[in-house]
Length: 74
Length: 319
Image 1: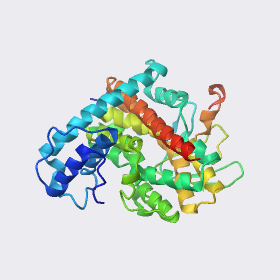
Image 2: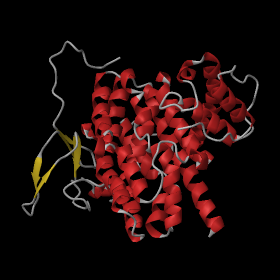
Image 3: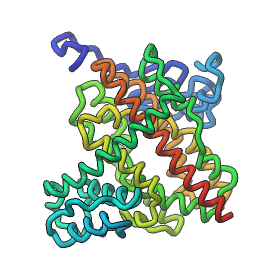
Image 4: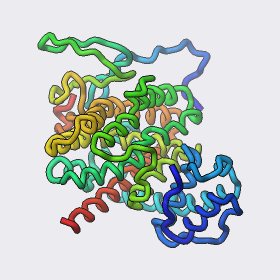
């Protein structure tokens, strides 16, 4: 059972996904430059990038957004 | 791995049959939860890597499958009752997308935390005991979920494979998660061969393992398997960080710290993939799967509570 008709024109899988109240997912290999000019390379098929600014593993997400009140989450 | 020690009349009868190849035990009831759990665990293990002292064709022996089914019916009913009790305390809001609902449940859930104990207070002996308990799953980490792959339509399947590929090291054996755990165990002076500590496993750990195999092996329970995965991932990043801090407090080897550090960032991505994309696609295509997904979520939470309660009580009693 599927909601999409496989005969429709294919819709590409997004490379970037913004998760509600959470991180940004990046699919594939990317090099990120952080605010201090340091470069970080993704190593996983899908990587979560911090959007709340509180991660201890910046620029990657470490789940810290869940400790924030919903109003100040991304 | 050889068959574990029996824990009662049923596992005793079952294990002698598994060794000798005789007729499966009919009419032998489990003596207690330990007996039922080790019997079911061993029958499931025939589908993973098997036992050196059991013939390979035991996996599809219809009499053994009948014993397995009897144990599963009881276990599934028990899990259903525990999930229903959880739903009384933490009801679902059916208006929410399933991904949001999974995060809402895992964040609202309050239970005892082994990660908090490891972070702040655990002794090295307690941590080593916890690693031995966890090894029953971590040495086959991600494997129960792989059963689900061929049962999915394209969208959840593609997203699940992205997640599983990361679990399996993206083609690099030294990055494969159960290999990382093996290296962590060896670095602490523990044995790392598959199943080394099953005889020590408390019944709560066996049941946690059995739930994943039950969900994984039954197509009917594919939603529960994915819900369990989502809840497992959604309760991993922050606790894994606390565990790394506890292991560093105790001055434990970098290899075991690395296993947990890897899970901080990996599972921050996996939880989003599992809850929003994998479970989201499954339920979007078939809304009747929502209930099954939430069964898996709740089962994951209550089974981990049971493990934590048991271990913390045991350590308190010996303190």
